[in-house]
Image (cartoon, rainbow, N blue to C red; front, side):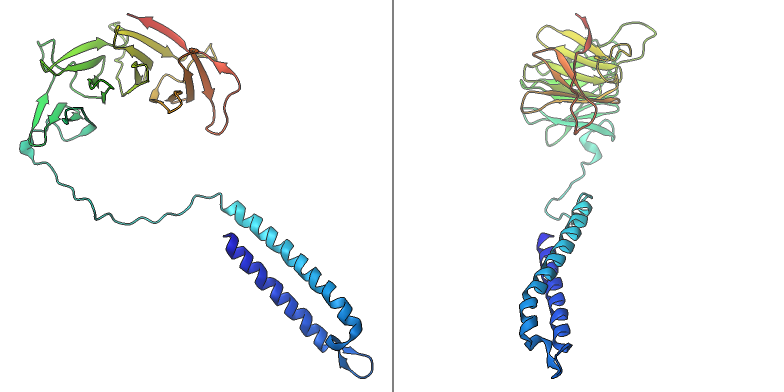
Length: 291
């Protein structure tokens, strides 16, 4: 863009100089009607005129460049081509998927691929699938039918987000251990675990529509963080959509009401009202712990 503007400015200067020279050539000097270009008096004025022409065109070029700079703030157009270097193969029905609506896909350290569907969990070994479902009467089966989320932690353990429980798969016995998340009140709504993440300390963070939960796998302790309208220093919103830790160790929480940064060392939450503007006031999270 700058190269284009530079060439444009040079062309404008050349055209203006050409106009000035033609005007000088057509103007007469004295009674002998000699061309003005050959007049010694105007030869002294010619450099000044050319200098003025350069200044005028440079100013015009600068204004045009500023207009183009404002236009550059718009999204860029990218070229999209059809990919031909990857071939896809659909698994046939005999591979045993329990349901076609797959919401989550993860791979464990042994190479197994796990599919979370709306009706059970599927483990695929490259040849066939094994289905794990909720079986009434079996306390060590899946606690739910609809698999809301899947996650493999740093140790290779597989975690499943269900409606009211966080399930852990036990690979030796191929059973599941259940950890209740949320309240046990009969009239309360289920706490669906829609996303699971892990921080550098090994704690699991569970994103739910009823707040943010921190689960310690070593102690099975659960800590809930909720929004309190009377407390401006609480978490921005209860419907947590995403949590994650960046390379600097900062933990981010995205909810329906804003973006928060959590500092585990200081046990503080920093509200971020906009992506390009950080809040000046540090805040803390309102928490309630349960064993």
